[in-house]
Length: 511
Figure 1 (cartoon, helix red, strand yellow):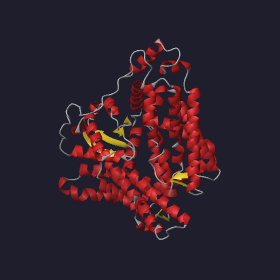
Figure 2 (spheres, one colour):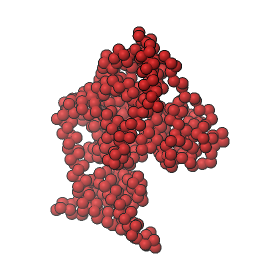
Figure 3 (cartoon, one colour):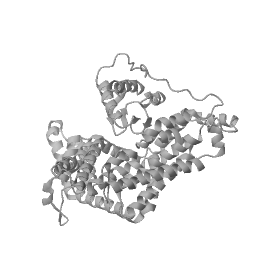
Figure 4 (cartoon, helix red, strand yellow):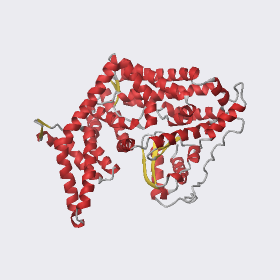
């Protein structure tokens, strides 16, 4: 997509989210433009979804517009320029209208089969219900913790691929002089990861970001080896990202308390001093030790689970990941993945969890084959499948499988079987892990590593994907639809009639 098209996409999105005055933060992850908005009611989600470049819209703690890898980076830059700069001529920012915005596709006519727009409305209603259920204090904190790590994903991915390249050259015995340079490039960021986590944590939870970075930097300072706690000397990096999170969260609270009691004349001098001193001492004499024990326990449990659980562990993890996403509990896995990468160089959990996306893709293919007469749903699947193969599952989940119900269950079955294959092969000694978090599907291949080298690890992951695709497809094809569902969804199915109109009405009722 040329730069002018990226800018045109940004110009089309801006009015549909309420204009620049409604936007208070702009960020992006691997695939999504993440917007912090003052007034969510000003978002025209239907017209956003109708934009050609938009793969989906997810309303979470931020408004998340799925654009896909690569595209999202360029559109975000153009969008940020529009928000920060003067209004563009021709773009109306007061009433949510924009120039040259494709109109939303019309819904199905009376008596027609249930179409993609009906499923999209049903999916939006399910998301709204899930969001209301998930608005608990614990889940909201988990979302905010996830926001700490999202900005770090591009660097994790880049450094992970560089590390993989260095490992490949080492195994091949090529370019020995280049390997140390690649190691420095990939390991430099990881060695300071706690500092970035501390910075983002303080920023996310309302503190001064640089103070969060300052207290987190204590964890990676080499001089902590001279500090003795409980009869043992601390090790640089002990506690990792968990310790950095805890230290920065404590710094935010200490800073707030200090500012409340500190006279204005002394605030600029004493508030930072008290924050760094108090939090630093607590970090050295408590948090580093406790977080180190927690991180060690996480690593040991993950290793034990995959080495002893095998196929059963993979079955459960792969099958439950999509429901975890629905419940908002998948956010808790991000610090775990990052901890495993710090400790072991890779996370063996991510390739297993990625099998959920494979089951979803197989499910979508089966829906496409079964609903031969439903051009609307088939068109949605055709446009979303390429993104699904790259691990972007939201368009298929919320636009196809989840609103249909039974296909969502068979998609989970596909993920479970794919995870079981990866888990079983790992128990047999062919473990596979990812050196970074973020991508899944085919996009995860460049980040893979394995106990028997990249080639074997990639083969194990490919076997899991193939199993997930096949199981999701066959399970959905044969068990994903009742006869009544087919009659109501497929315009060419025998028995089309009043029942279809009733079914369509039930979808429209959730608007």
